Each structure stands twice: as C-alpha cells, then as structure tokens.
Image 1 (cartoon, rainbow, N blue to C red):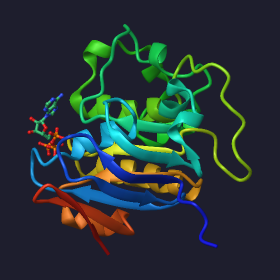
Image 2 (image 1 turned 135 degrees about the horizontal axis):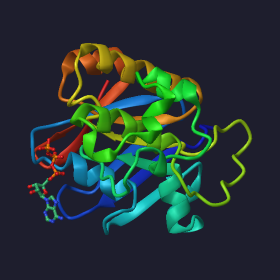
Image 3 (image 1 turned 30 degrees about the vertical axis):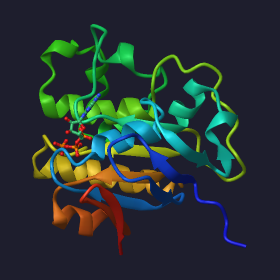
Image 4 (image 1 turned 120 degrees about the horizontal axis):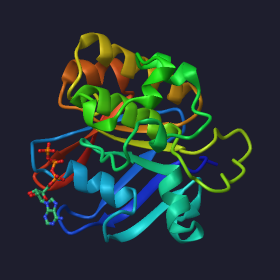
Length: 216
Ligand SMILES: Nc1ncnc2c1ncn2[C@@H]1O[C@H](COP(=O)(O)OP(=O)(O)OP(=O)(O)O)[C@@H](O)[C@H]1O
C-alpha cells in the first residue's frame, strides 16, 4: 500500500485555477513556479487554509476538518513573501526558547532578539521570519507529534524565501531548509530561479494556462 502523502490536495479549487491535485511527502522539497500573477501565492494561502477554497486537503492522512484552524496553520505553515511584524522587538515575535543554533544558522547572534523591528533590513526580516516560522511565540500546547514526525510545523509553504538575499544568505537559507527536510518536514518552495530549483528540489509543479502541472 502507498503511504499517504504528508500533504494531499484533491480537486482543490480557490477560484483562479482549474481544480488541482497536489501531493507532498515528508522530507521532500517540491518547487513551484510560474509567471507573475499566475496564482502561486494564492495556492499557498489556500493550502494554509487562509483563504476560502473547495476540495479536499489532508495532512498525514487526516482531513482538514480533523484539525482546529490554528492547529492546521501551525502544522502547515506559510512563509509569505513579505511577512508582517507587529511588535516592537524581534524577540517578542519568537518562542522564548528559540535555539541559538537556529539564529546562528541564519547569520544572527542571540542579541538579535533585542533588536527593534523597525531597524531590520528586508533581508533580515526575511531570514528572521523563517526562524519565527519554526519557533513562533505563544503557540499553546504543541500537540504530540505522530510517531517519527518532527514537532510542528510539518509542512513549510515558502513564498520566494530568498528573494531579497545575497548569495551568502541565500546559501544559509538553503542549508537551513535542507536541515528541515532532513528532520522530515515537507517543503513547497516558490522559486523563479531554475538554478536554485535544481539545487533544492526533487521535483516541481508549474502553473501554466491556469493549470498546475507536475514536472519531474
Ligand atoms: N484577494 C484577492 N482577490 C482577488 N484576486 C486576487 C487576490 N489576491 C490576489 N489576486 C489576484 O490573483 C492573481 C494571482 O495572484 P498571486 O499573488 O497568487 O500571483 P503569484 O503567482 O504569486 O505572482 P507573483 O510571482 O507576482 O508573486 C493575480 O491576478 C492577483 O491580482
């Protein structure tokens, strides 16, 4: 029997594209690309259950309805192209126990937690939003993971996570995300860069003529 995919969308319809099927396994990185305005962000938002949609989406074999809304979004976590920041300091946005190793992997000293958000550059915001995706503040009662599963999030929906970064920081982010794959998380990664897709992804989906097509 084929094991169920980590994330599975069947006949997903959010009003822009033909109803689409998509699967993502744990430990897999799948690239997503297509022209500007083709619907990549809206697809990620539908998978994260942030916008209305029809069709069946399941996580670890359990349908969306099995999970409370906040629990789904904790497990199927979206990194937007421009993540919002609403509190004064970086540290206020992150879990109190955010590992220094995660900060260091993305080029930060622990002092970054005291930095004012308003001083952050675009690229610093992008890298710190990735740390926050893995270690958000104020997530009550992290559910016990399934056997062998990493702590949530299990799926990372990444909207051009290196768009504002130089080569060195792009490498840091790629390494950090490779570590997340090794931990068993599944990555759906929007990238316009064919060289990056070849480096990081096992396969891909492209949006063409209002349809999602799988590319191997
Ligand atoms: N809330 C919304 N309501 C209606 N249309 C929307 C909404 N958000 C986005 N759109 C439209 O849906 C289309 C797809 O937008 P989307 O942001 O998903 O594109 P994209 O593929 O991510 O593009 P880019 O590569 O430029 O980021 C665009 O025409 C956009 O204007």
